[in-house]
Amino acid sequence: MDYRLFIAIDLPETVREELSRLCCSLEKIRWVSEEQFHLTLRFIGRGDGALVRDLCDRLSILETQPFFLSLQGTGCFPPGGDPKILWAGLEQSVPLSKLYRQIQKELVLCGIEREGRKFIPHITLGRLKGEPLLNVGQWLSRTSSFKTEDFEVDSFHLYTSQLYPEGAVHNKLASFLLY
Image (cartoon, rainbow, N blue to C red; front, side):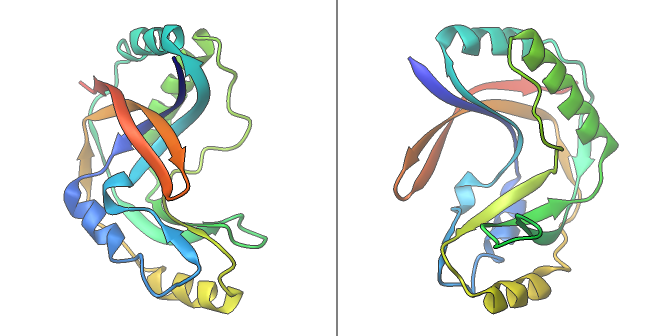
């Protein structure tokens, strides 16, 4: 079987509820549903069952202690062009960067090339579909002070993603505890 794979951190329900309150005031956008909010650590792409087994073997040996994160601010991608994606950002986190680097190392050992772009941790809120720039700018201005309380990260997960016209559906394949 062929999978579309990514590695992510789940968010607590309270944080997902706070994020969902940001998802309003724009019409030409496909908002991400509250239950689909997550922090992608690495999109892997297509892989088969053998790759899934290799990934599970490699990721299960990571030794990283639980840590705390906080979401802060909003933005859009691409940063200097016509906005396509709205997101919520994160406060800078050394433990998150360390976990990301460890995952990258294990992926390379599984034969997956290093990601070519810089890791910019964010939670995707929605995909724009021609919303006027003025409206996007007003939304960004209104939501720029967004901030959550700290929340603990004690695990990360390997997901598969299936794309549909209404949006992606994510299914958890494996979980990895931090200890």
